Amino acid sequence: MIVKSWKFTGFKATFPDWVQENSSKRKGSKFLWVHTQTGEVPAEEGMYIAINLRGHVDVYDFKPEGWIKEIRNRNSLRNPNRSTASVYARMVNKQFAKHCYDQYQMNHKGYHGFQHWARVFQNGRHIAQAENANTKVVDLFALLHDTQRKNESRDPQHGYRAAKYAHSIRGKWFDLSNKDMRLLDEALTYHSDGYTDADITVQTCWDADRLDLGRVGIQPSPKKLCTQTAKNAINNYCSTDPRLWPASTSYN
Ligand SMILES: [Fe+2]
Image (cartoon, rainbow, N blue to C red; front, side, top):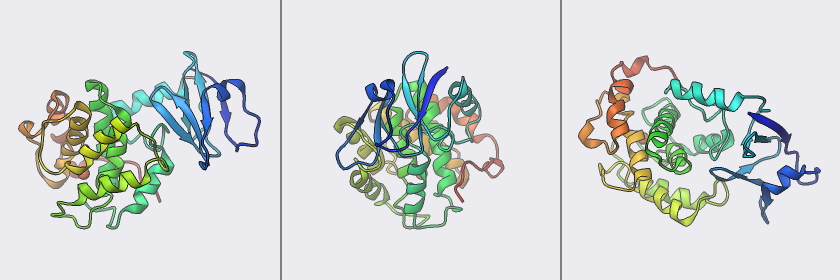
């Protein structure tokens, strides 16, 4: 339940006490860094910061009121094809998704474009919640993992390039601890190499991607998935013709 919200209009504005207590400014950064339950989240001018009944703060790209956050979250979990990226700004917000979108050199209507990323995002959220994996890392993986692809078929280095790119924008577009950055690096670098043995967060990233193989006519094999949650989800995600899946979020 949202108790209060406040629109961030720049550093010259007067900050309410509860925002001051739960955020910080960084030298050279235009963002206000908000201390949420899942780590520091950058808020840009025009975004909202809100505090709920439990005293937890979060960042939104719309004015949150009442139970809106919880209701939207529940709906998005029920519909695995609906991306929360445009609805709910946390670590990964609309601006960051748009930034990743713009890095892609190929046509987003192909197999590895934004619609695929949005499904990986949804799969990742679902698996991360069940497996207690690091959602922040999994969200970042979903939007970054195919950004550096150069073709739709064999491009064995695209994971490595995605990891390199992630390092180059760390601190600018997102913030991660060294430990979490190592997980993101591993997940990105090796995501198309077929491994299954890794930390649960890395496994969640790989499974989120592999569960979307139906789009290219491949039924994901339980043997090639890492987590029990993904193995259990195969039928939910792939029993229908992927061509019938609704389009997820797009940015025009
Ligand atoms: Fe992918």
